[in-house]
Each structure stands twice: as structure tokens, then as C-alpha cells.
Length: 281
Ligand code: HEC
Ligand code: HEC
Image: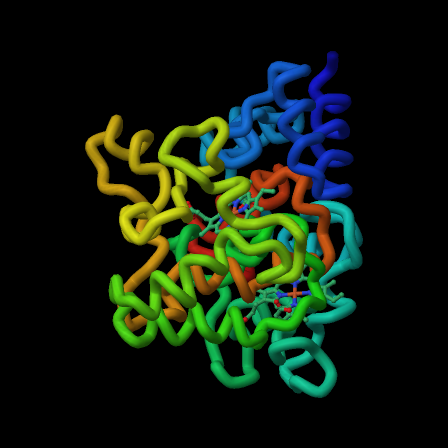
């Protein structure tokens, strides 16, 4: 079966957000869960861009970067970025983010909290990469599911209060990760993040215990590289905790199918341009 058909199968599995379908597809077509999580099942376009452009450090023309925000489907099926982000006035554009020019992109979001979305030279920092790659959780949740529900705010408060292993955590917070419809879909966090073993657990993340949550993601894979796990909770700091970010931040373009390639070739080109200094001329 071809690469494209494989991705289609995975996409359709995700479209229905049926985990069973996803895993059956994965098993049936030799597609590993980690490929979805890491995006290492490269399609041919991604492979070509990585080999011929990114690895070689080919200079990226700013005109190309500007054009990406003006066309639909540039980073996965969906409306062009400029439809929703073409002014610094928050009444006219979400987050007061103007992506209609290179200067606007570098200026960043002008609605409070005012922030840069691109940090020249640092492709992994800034909000742009985060919003183009990270799917909101639980995977498949609707883009318009509110971000201030009682349950989401309870998780936020628990983190901001120091993320303690208290009775409150055991009785009120931990059960949410195993509860259907706690965060906008019938899928529970522990269905997909149940142990430190991937597959079946995406990102080797175990959301079923305090220990697992505090250990974080990719403990085994990172250990093999001599690195610590990826923390998902930073006590006292919900804004920088991936656990909270993943509950409230929608991947862009808003409404994009979570099965779309998280390492889209145009995203790789954009990151290369940022690494090269994000110059507008
Ligand atoms: C249909 C409307 C829509 C489209 C299209 C869209 N966005 Fe957004 N974007 C939003 C909304 C609404 C938010 C506010 C946060 C949220 O809903 O998660 C947002 C937030 C963002 C943020 C976070 C900025 C911050 O300071 O919090 C970034 C970055 C972003 N969008 C980039 C993009 C890019 C790049 C594209 C094109 C691939 C895009 N958006 C397409 C509606 C859209
Ligand atoms: C249907 C499966 C599925 C469900 C349900 C699910 N996740 Fe995920 N999760 C994933 C996948 C796949 C990834 C990695 C790829 C991505 O970002 O889309 C991921 C990534 C994450 C990450 C990022 C880990 C890292 O290394 O940065 C966090 C945090 C996370 N999920 C938390 C949650 C929480 C909290 C819930 C419940 C509200 C949840 N997930 C429900 C599949 C799922």
C-alpha cells in the first residue's frame, strides 16, 4: 500500500476519532503509532524538502514565506491564514496577528497577552511552530470547544497551585483524565496515554498516575539519547506546561484535521527560514 493511501487511512481513522479504527489501521498497514506521534513516516514531498532544502541550508526567499500565509491548504487542508489574521486590530483579526506581510509576522500578536510568534534564529521557540504542529487534546476535539470549562480551569489551577500530589489531586483532578467527555470528546486521555510504552501509548506518556504525569513524555526514547523526559507539567506555571497548552491551543489553520502531516514540507521551509534569521528582504 502506498504512502498516500496509508496517510488517508490514518486520516480517516482520526476524522471519526475512532481510536480502535486508528490502531487497527496501524496494525493492518504496518503504520506505527510513533510515526503519527513523531511524524517520522515522511511523505515524498517532506523527504525531498528535508534532503534537498533543509539539510543543505538552501536560502529561503522571503516572498515564498509571505505567499504561504495567503494561500489555502499551505500547512494542511484549511482556509488561508490571512482570512483570520490580517490586522493588528483584535476586532478585525484573531489575536491581533497580521500575517499579510513579513513585517506583520515578525511583529507578532498585538492583543493581550502581546507576544512574538517568531524568534529569528530560533525555529523551535515562538508560538508559530507550536500552533502549526501541536494538536489540541483530546485528539480530535472540536476547535470551538470552550477553553474555560470547569474541568480545564481545575487542571490549570492545580498546576498553578504547585501541582501537588494531594487528596484534591487524587479525588478531583486525576479521575478527569479517565473520564469520558471531561474535555469535549468521549475519548479519555488514558485511552491514548496509558503507559511509558509506545505503542500503544502516544509519546510514552502515562496520564493514569501522578508519577506518570510528573515524569512526562518520551521518557524511554529520551533516555536512549541520554536526555531527560519532556516535562508536561511545570509546577506553578500553567502557561508553560504542555498539559495545559494542549487543552486550550488549537492547531492552525483552525479546524485542521489532526491527521494532517505535523511536519508538513511548507512548515519545514518556514522553520528553515526562521533558522536563517527570518529576514524580510
Ligand atoms: C478560520 C480562522 C483561522 C485561520 C484560517 C487561522 N487561524 Fe490562527 N487563530 C485563530 C483563532 C481563533 C486563534 C485564537 C486561539 C485559538 O483559537 O486557539 C488563532 C491563534 C493563532 C496563533 C496564536 C497566536 C497567539 O499569540 O496566541 C497563531 C500563531 C496562529 N493562529 C497562526 C495561524 C497560521 C499560521 C494560520 C494559517 C496556517 C492560521 N493561524 C489560520 C483563527 C484562525
Ligand atoms: C485518540 C488519541 C489521543 C487522545 C484521546 C489524547 N491524546 Fe494526547 N496525544 C496524542 C497524539 C497522537 C499526540 C502527539 C501528536 C500530536 O500532537 O498530535 C499527543 C500528544 C500529547 C501531548 C504532548 C506530549 C509531548 O511530548 O509534547 C500531551 C501533553 C497530551 N497529548 C495530553 C493529552 C491529554 C491531557 C489528553 C486528554 C484530555 C489527551 N492527550 C488525549 C493522542 C491522543
